[in-house]
Amino acid sequence: MSAGRSIDKTLAALADPHRRRAVELLGQRPRRAGELADALGLPAPAMSRHLRTLKQSGLVEESHPEFDARVRIYTLKEGAMADLKKWLADTERLWADQLSSFKTHVEKKRK
Image (cartoon, rainbow, N blue to C red; front, side):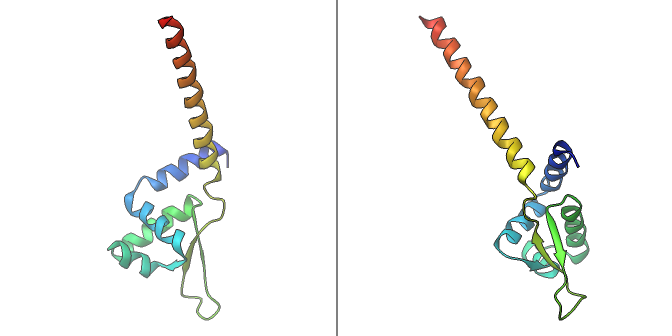
């Protein structure tokens, strides 16, 4: 998947406040879907849809503990936001450069 497509999928997944909160909770520790649903005050089917979107975007992955294959544990996928972080850093650098150039231009005009 290209970096641009990856960023688009990440931003689309994070556009929903429930999914952003789920990502925050998963950043603290892995959790079961029921735990996330309770913490977010969502019914199980809604939480399932949000988790499916997060998995499809590549932000979250699920695993099954050895003791019970029916249980799903959700975790943040390592490195899933690398493309977004790089894009943000590059964009911030671009803006800083543009603002610096503008400042230089304005200061020359004043003299």
